[in-house]
Length: 118
Image (cartoon, rainbow, N blue to C red; front, top):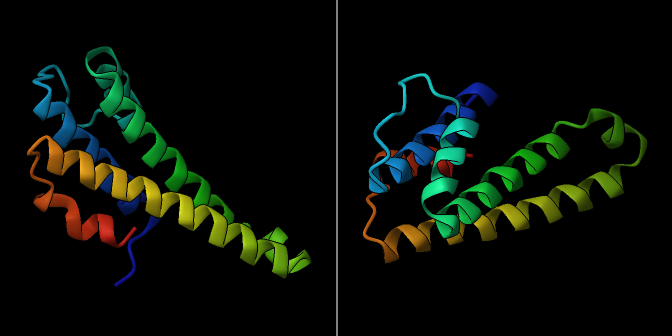
């Protein structure tokens, strides 16, 4: 089963919500965008914000490069290198999120399967 881009962005938002709940940020609407939640997290805990922002940005960059059909058609070798480079950055960010959650005793179980499918 392949997640759509919207499903993946929703998974990122749900992950961000888990950290917001951990930080006792209560004024989050059910349909709040992840960018807004990240801003609230930034006001509360700069370390968590930094790690989550990197995770979000690395995934967005990787997703963009993977879908860049123009680069893929014109210069496939460069496209492959860029996909690999952005994927490696994303994996590092993902490990940082998982490590942070472990260190702070934050349960990511509700979203881990979805995160693995990103």
